[in-house]
Amino acid sequence: MFKRFPTPILKPYWPFFVGGVFVYWGVGKAASASAQTAEFINDPRNPRFARGEKPVELK
Amino acid sequence: MPQLVPFYFLNQLTYGFLLITVLLVLFSQFFLPRILRLYVSRLFISKL
Amino acid sequence: MLNLLNTYINSPLDQFEIRVFLGFVSPFFDLSCLSFTTFSLYALIVFIVIVGGLNLLTTNNDKIVGSRWYVSQEAMYDTILNMVKGQIGGKYWGYYFPLVYTFFIFIFTANLISMIPYSFALSAHLVFVVSLSTIIWLGATITGLYKHGLIFFSLFVPTGTPLALVPLLVLIELLSYFARAISLGLRLSANIIAGHLLLLILGGLVLSLMSVSYIYFIFGFIPLAAILAILCLEFAIAVIQSYVWSILTSSYLKDALYLH
Image (tube, rainbow over all chains, first blue to last red; front, side):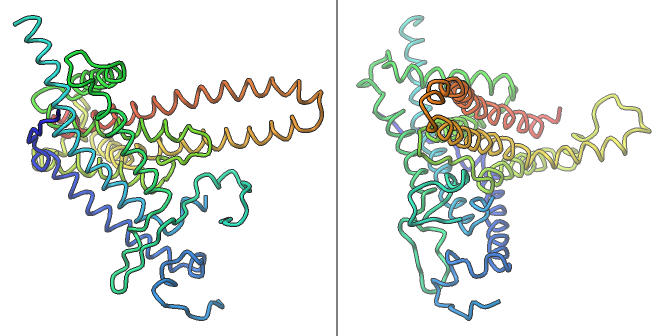
């Protein structure tokens, strides 16, 4: 029903995967930086509470 | 827009890029060649 | 803000909220990005609709003449094929056609699924869509630099400009080139956010209008007809924005591959 044709994926699209790695790293850095700001540091959805860090939440 | 500035950036990116990569591989190796094969076989049948 | 106990919608922006259904907590590395949230649920739904609904179930038992759903798939295939062949053309259009097709089908399906009432708009998330467009822009730039080396920068000098204007023009061209990265994504997500927000706000207003008394209920069908017209416009925007994304992607790839 569906024969697999080995169309090249890495050969034409490797710049997009490289760009994807850069963007993923960049957005990860931005997300962890914005999770430390005063607005979001005590938000209950912050993953640091799941890791066990339950510091004094008074700011 | 608070809903677009939460902690789910990496979650969105992970699942989004995973979906797009899987779709890219599936389309380019299975579904698009099948459509092309249908076109080529119609051409062969009608024009030989 | 986040309301987990209240089932009514408090703010029109609540429709874009992401909730965690199955959290992923790991001891050493922070793998919470793999948790199952509304975004991943709808990504799974889009995947099932695209792969299962549109490709696996429409094969019509491998007959040469496709089923009616398959005719729609072939129509989309033809549209994107002719668009990519017209935009990119030349020697390399075939290599990049699956990428443009994937983006078109993904955004098309995600936008149409977001039109279901009480559903979730995948492309309304600014960070995801803008990072997708940044990846396309970075990929096109790296392709151009790899293929043409330093001659790639001749892209910023339009042909036939007098030599005195070249520095100013190069700066302007550079600015517009860098703006492509975010404008592509911002266009799509701003359109979807604005459309969904407008429909929700107008719907709420008409609801409070029509629930006052019987006279208001009768006359309330006129603004309801206006909302119906805006809904049709939203459907058109959902489809057209995916086409605009694909055609602009092919245009940026053409600029990088063939340098004007």
